Length: 492
Ligand SMILES: Cc1cc2nc3c(=O)[nH]c(=O)nc-3n(C[C@H](O)[C@H](O)[C@H](O)COP(=O)(O)OP(=O)(O)OC[C@H]3O[C@@H](n4cnc5c(N)ncnc54)[C@H](O)[C@@H]3O)c2cc1C
Image (cartoon, rainbow, N blue to C red; front, side, top):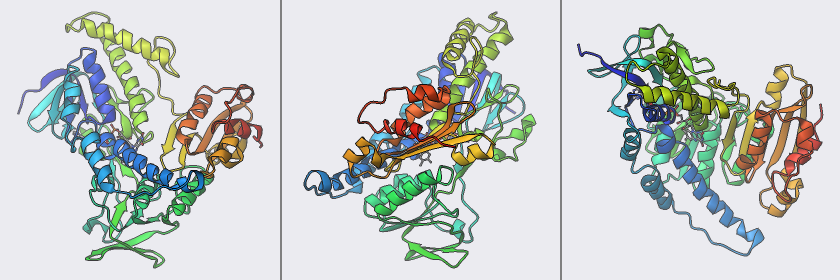
């Protein structure tokens, strides 16, 4: 058996979260081994956020050109998917090659190991024949993979996940999208705008079910306007594939056919592959439970989607900063400021990083490691209109027994909404805690819903008193000025 190689930190999985932790700890002077079995950077740059937003940018350009009719004369658009596919291949993913990303990590002083790794007892990680013993910690950033429902026949068909949908070079004539969550809706709208006949099939009674009902309605209306057929309350029972394409049957005998089937019904962590049992951690859950410093157990941290705290790149980055501070703080305390391992610069770095994070962190007191706080978690569904949301929905707030006030206004009734003319689908919805006099949740749907959201995130994050928000000056005529209107309508 190979002798373990002793290093400071091992990071397993170099997606968004793992790469950030590994790179920053390496920059701080630690010996860091980063292990990745696929592409450094993970899902976001190659099959997620970045290429999907490139697709959306292109589809929105088409939609905007089609709006010229009511505003500025005539414009002719001839959508061409080849331009989008080329941009994704060449500009976003380098043809799904991570050489640049690997160099980004090794240039910071990290050591890169390609391969699938697993825990091999306390402090140890194995990659094939190589074993690493981590002196100061192991960070698990292994992410998630698509969760495919156990629908009869589905597993035997060549269905798409987000990966095939992002890599597609030639569009099909028709597409069934199983799953009406954010990813399903974003991709459905893109493909529809490029001329694909798209049907979205959702088991729940509304699309975008985790958000406000008004958000679901706005998204569904917009997609329908783009020609997408939306079928809710349909539980898939069976999938068949033949020369003509896919047939999906629902439990109530509904039948849908299309050339391609895209399955986007959520994601799940694969904890059983990580060797968690070798460190006494239960691998039976859906995600890896962590505390507010992202610790799984002594000396083991987890970052990103694997923690189940919200599958967003910004969550992974947020958590990564806390882990870096905690690992360095841990190391400084363990070494008592001394330099037994020749890491004097690291100890110095620890103080610097930890204290600068505490200075910018929301919930850490000065000099302490900041604690994770998801109260003001922002999320954006990049449909057109964009749907941004932060904090609790009205229903979630009521379920918690909060004395809720709600304020709602349509963007169309604002000056900017009226000027905009073509994007009348959009609104601001505010959820306030009447006893505390602060916003605890908000949704902003509209042409720039994700950007307007930022003001609402500040309000929820910093618990800005409603009296202050009411006395703010909102620039005229902006979309965000509708926040002021919604504040004026807050009622129990
Ligand atoms: C279509 C789509 C669109 C999205 N759009 C957005 C968006 O607009 N905004 C947003 O914030 N988020 C978006 N997301 C979510 C975002 O991509 C994820 O939240 C983010 O990638 C999570 O990063 P992570 O580091 O936790 O995991 P991942 O990016 O999944 O990385 C985990 C890495 O670990 C590696 N790995 C796993 N197991 C092992 C092992 N045993 N050994 C070695 N390596 C291993 C994997 O190969 C992978 O590279 C989108 C996702 C999808 C699918």
